[in-house]
Length: 129
Image 1 (spheres, rainbow, N blue to C red):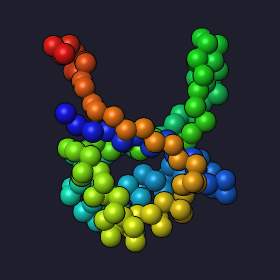
Image 2 (spheres, one colour; image 1 turned 90 degrees about the vertical axis):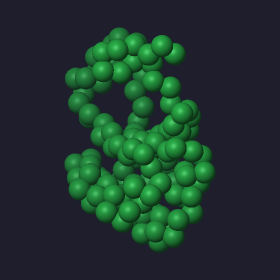
Image 3 (spheres, rainbow, N blue to C red; image 1 turned 60 degrees about the vertical axis):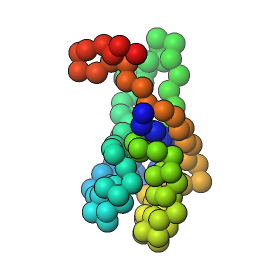
Image 4 (cartoon, one colour; image 1 turned 180 degrees about the vertical axis):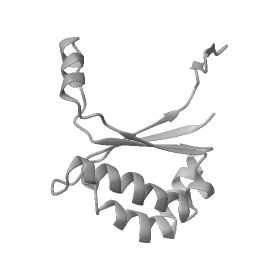
């Protein structure tokens, strides 16, 4: 069973959402993959860029749903909690990735969730779980 870490991210106030999204997608994400951290510690990494569409948000609110005030979500899948812990203390994480995060995010406002992934529905087939 995989471990999934979900990080809710806010952009820095001094950059636009477009700048945030472009930097995260084209620079930071590629850096995470190219420096070897992704392959060494994770089994999957994904970025979720929020749709800042007032019409869509309005429809959700009209239907009685609340929306979160975040600009993106980073999703990391690990084979174990140990792999996740190793990523956090890796020298490249500390010396390269963490300083880069400060270029486009308000790291002090991140919120995280961690849990075990159990697939219930995938590619049109229901799981036996």
